[in-house]
Image: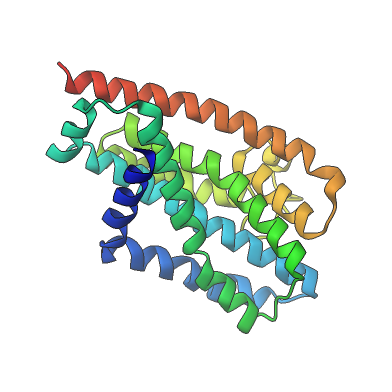
Amino acid sequence: MYRAHVVSELAQNARMPAFVLPLLAYPVLIYVVVGLPQGGPPSARLSVLLGYVLFSVLGTVTFQFGVGVASARESPWERWLFTAPVPAWIRLAAKLTVACVFGVVFVIPVIAVGVLAGGVRGDPATLAAVALAVLAGAVPMALLGLAMGYWFPARGALGLANLVYLPLSFAGGLFTGGDTSGTPWDPLTVLLPTGAWSTLTSAVARQDLAVVGPPLVILAAWAVLLGGVTLAGYQRTQSANFR
């Protein structure tokens, strides 16, 4: 049943050019305009690229799997699904999986530009470890999007996504390679989900495994918190459909 829901969600989203094209193009455009000109040594270029990779994933999960879920909730098909005898965890796990899949797929153009135009390089083992770090942070980010989708109507979710997307990106240092020194929010950066995510991926890229523990714990705490909020929102929506 979980697999069927994953396949259905993948097919439903992949058939929507209005969903696919902007999420593919926007992070690439921002990286080309802002990220590439920063230059620097290879390690700095890699850190900047990783920030825009995270920016791409964050955009996917906040807009499509936040605003998208909020809009879909109002459709007759989605209302019928809430009445089907399917455990909440199966539907939520399927949506979470699809959010992570699309988030990873949509970073490919950003990475391609970084490699071809930015000269970013990395050995296979490091890149594989970085990919795992990106996925680890994508989980709480996807849960953030789902929480918005189940707690807010479509218009409210859109406004909230705009309020969350760029501020979290700036505060987490996604546009500066994880460096937020000198900013008023620097002491709080690592406590933010994006800050912990950026710290984790940067540490893995540097192979500085001694510092990956704290950001992993913070991301896990955010995942538990946002997972609980998402589940409560799902059950609230489900109860409303049974009235």
